Image 1 (cartoon, rainbow, N blue to C red):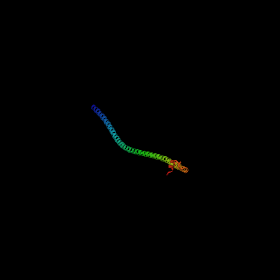
Image 2 (image 1 turned 90 degrees about the vertical axis):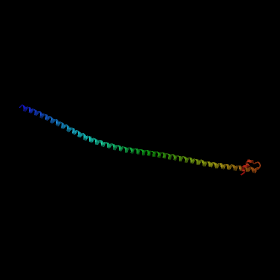
Image 3 (image 1 turned 90 degrees about the horizontal axis):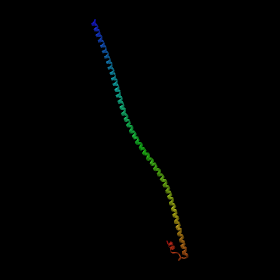
Image 4 (image 1 turned 45 degrees about the horizontal axis):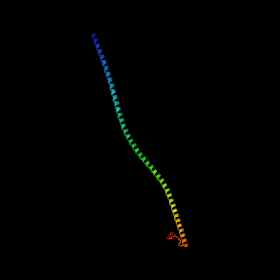
Length: 165
């Protein structure tokens, strides 16, 4: 009986050890499953992160390309704007020159009219002087002729020279 008790106690002890070992194996299996789940989850997350990284990289390159295109567009538009400003400045300068030229033409025309009037006035004065000189010569001529008729020897020599053609 004692041997049965010892056998029972050993068997019980073996069962307890077996049960504890089974529990430890179950715990290890559970821990291993959790590790596998964590690793699979990490692998899925890593794959998702790589895909997101690749997508972000592609978007980055797309944005860089888009920014370069926009930069060139802005540079071209800036250059075009500068050309338009130059054209506008040239048109403004041309308009100013044309306005100044019109003012110059008006002033010149006024000066020409004034000069023409002065020339006509001078011609009229010259004609008046010529007419007056002719009249004076005619008066001298008549005086000399009258004096020569009255007294031909008393007529001064300078008056006679005036009468000579």
